[in-house]
Every structure is written in structure tokens, then in C-alpha cells.
Image 1 (spheres, rainbow, N blue to C red):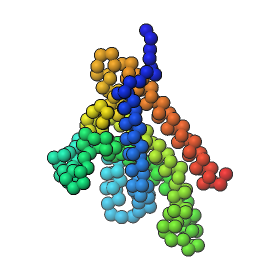
Image 2: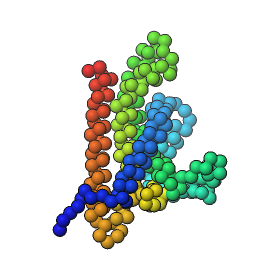
Image 3: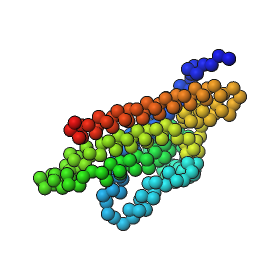
Image 4: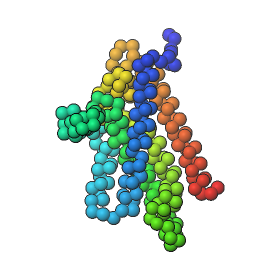
Length: 235
């Protein structure tokens, strides 16, 4: 029997494009907040630090369906936050690709924070102190010393988050459903094909594409990480 692993129809292409779009936006929008949260968890001393740490990592230990359901309860069109966003600025998340971005970002956020936090904790405080003694302000120390030394961790965290967002399924399908061309990402499309007779071949093709994208993302992470470490180390 002839196999056609590389033959993709409109449904498959839409799922691939939407997955890449969702994963990219989820990563870009999460990154500034992840850097800030990682910094305050690594360096900050304040009441409620452990509470914040638990909240950040909660999506890692909760079933993804529970996260999706909580998002639905918060941002549904009949719920307080969702109703406010729709009435005030016309912004709707539920059953939209923007909602898929939010779900993917929340599920990927803990991995990004953990990676960046480890990078912060490995920064030598003596280098920051030396910059302060030379008259650098806290902001200048952050920009000229801390952030450059954190770059390998930031790159690793961003790639981890992208890969996690690309493969997110449970929270996404619960929050925004599985609407072809609107919210159907790669995992949702694979799930849909597996539910219909004769859909195994299309599902297998999408699985192969998902694996390929993940491998390319990891390879890019290694290359970028090596270049950043070489630049930071002055080699």
C-alpha cells in the first residue's frame, strides 16, 4: 500500500500554521514577565514569595484540563473578566486563537521561569557588586551585567516554552475547543484525525511534522546557547 506521509491538505496546513503562530506569540508575550518573575524569585526577599512560587509552578502539577476549565471560568463570555474585556475593548479569548495563546503561555510559563531562575542564581554577585562600586545604577547593573550573563538561560527557557506551547493540548482544547481553522492546533488536529476512520495516515504525518519542529527547535537552542555562552565568556 502506497504511503503519502508528505501529502498535506488544507486542514493540516492550517493546524501547522496556527500551532507555530500560537507557540511564537505565547513565548514572546511570556518572556518579559518570566524574566521579571525569575529575578524576584531568585533575588527578592518579600512576604508571599513562596506563594508566588507555588502559583507560578501550579500549571506543572495540575491536570491541563483543570487549567483550561479555570480559564473558561475566568474568561468565558458570560464570566466577569471575559465579559469586561469584550464590553470594554471588544477582546474575546474563548473559542479564539488568542485564547489558545493564553492557554499555551500559562502552561509553558513555569518551564521558562525555572530555566531563567537557574541562570539568575548562577550569576556571580561579585560582578554585579563591582559594577555598583564603579557607580552603575541598579538598572545599569541589570542591563549591562545581569541580563547578558542570564542570556543562555533566557534562550533555553524561551525554546522550552516554545516547544511546550507547540505541544499543548489539554488546556487549549478545554478553553478554546477544537475549531478547524480557528483554534485547531497540531495536537488537536492529530486527536481529530484519530477519531475518524482512515485518519491514521494524516495523524502520522502531523506527528512526524511535530517531531521535526521540536528537533529543529532544540537544535536551534543548542546553537544559540553555544554562541551566547561563547560571547558572554569572551571566547
